Length: 354
Image 1 (cartoon, rainbow, N blue to C red):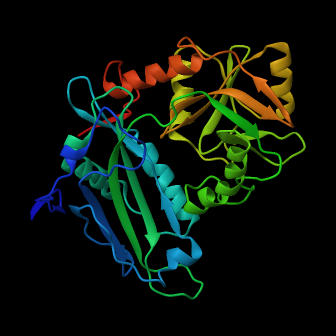
Image 2 (tube, one colour; image 1 turned 120 degrees about the horizontal axis):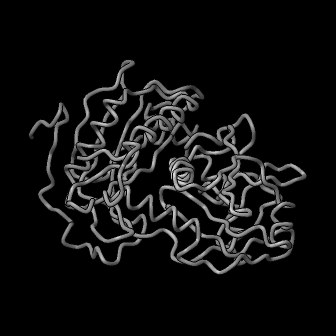
């Protein structure tokens, strides 16, 4: 065992790196060699350790399995043009992780602990960071209630784990989505702004119904008569209306997306007008009919940008103009990629070099 910044590292003796075809990376099924572990006991976070990736032992009475105290983050590391590795917007991800933990009554951890853990794991699996354009090393930190008890209570013991895996593009084609007018992803006052597991589990059923109807995803709404749009599947959503980038305002039912925030910043820097405001199904229909709705797209860590080609509203399909490389969404995406890879200046200090 060797020590790296107070984090013990046990390197694997059986790397799986040679088994991976980095030219054909699926999303979410390839795991790197190592993982980081830390436990919360006696009201404090204990030492972190990096060990070979593998199964962990849990009790059937573990509280997270019964009462849902589990939150996670999704981050990415990139191989830069000069060969360095960069972790994108780690501070922003940490802030959201802490907000999610607070909402789910999970003890906070310091930024130093979080950042040193992420950097140490990425360093340990540096060879797993893909160099191909559009690919990255996905980083999944998560924490869950590990206390062994089946009575309903806030847990007093937790486990923090980080693992990583190389990934390719999430979506390869423009999406066909449906404005969901029956089910809701989240309610005001609920956990919609937290990145907790239950939000995703609860969204599976209406999403699966939409897929059976031939759609890739749903556009979630606030459930009002106006059907104000909130998110697109597991992503934030944006529209280009008469040359203006429009996105729903943040609330406690909308996730504060890191990619969303990055897009807004870059769009403004590039001279585009951005409006964070409500936009309902009726306005979308009007935009289709009068030609003012030019683009629609989802933004998120996994997909980065997912152009939307068709929006289904109240029984009718509406088709957007064909997606082209000159689209505003893809132009901003390219600038974002250039910043991540060190091709464009990182004037906002978004990149953490390891």
